[in-house]
Each structure stands twice: as structure tokens, then as C-alpha cells.
Image (cartoon, rainbow, N blue to C red; front, side, top):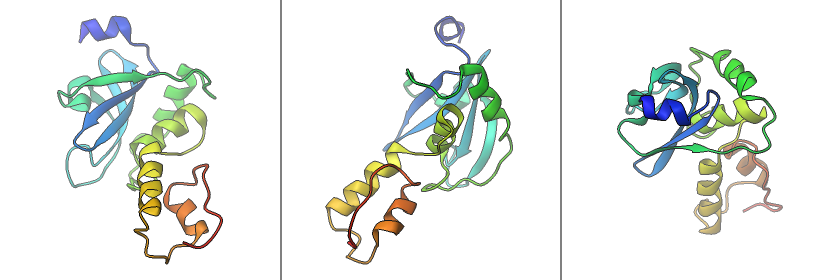
Length: 151
């Protein structure tokens, strides 16, 4: 892990690959990562926790996602993340690990992964014409896109 310590900075947004999705955390330094454990370890949802690098990455490729226009500094990002330690309100669609990290960095909960899935489902007509634009916005965690008519 020492090699990574020299390249990483505390407050970096870490992304690690999983089967079919990515998992997100904030690097705290000294081989520690804070993340919404959610479904990272299986089907049981878990809380916001601090873990070590190996547990977070699970041996998968892990990289730093750059943020050039952060709302909060790296130090503030870590403080915000720590303020939610032990929170146990994980929700795959509305409060997942990516929502958590974006809230820590930007003050807004959002998940690009959830948005992309919702957009795909809408484009494929998989909601069966029963979901309103308001409901769709709620499903994707109040992200920036809107659908102007009932689907």
C-alpha cells in the first residue's frame, strides 16, 4: 500500500470496479477509506464505515476520480464524510455509495450509475407507460434530467 500512499491524497474520490457497477469511497490516508458499505460485501446493506484499502478494493482495479470544481476542499470532504459515520440508511436508488461521495464533495446527492440505468430504461420503454416525470426524477435521486410528459 505504501506505493499508493505516495500518489494518493487524503480526500481523493476512489472508484473500484465490481461486477456490473463501480463502488465509491473517500481516501483518508494511511491505507484507510471511508465509504457507504451498502452492498459492497454482499446482499446485506451496510453503513457508512472506515475500512482498509484491501477491503475497499477487494483486489479490483481502483482509481482516483478527479474533481476540478469541488464545492468542498479535501479536508472539508473528509469532515463531511466522517459526519455520517455509522449512518445505516443505504438505498440502492436514492442513497448509495456514489450518492454519498457526491454529497461529501459537492453537497448534492447524485449517482451517475443510477441516472444512466433510469435513462436506459426510459429509452427502452421499460416503464410500461405508467411512470410520471416526477416519479422518474425521484427514482434517479433528483438528478438534472427531466422528462416533460408522462411515459
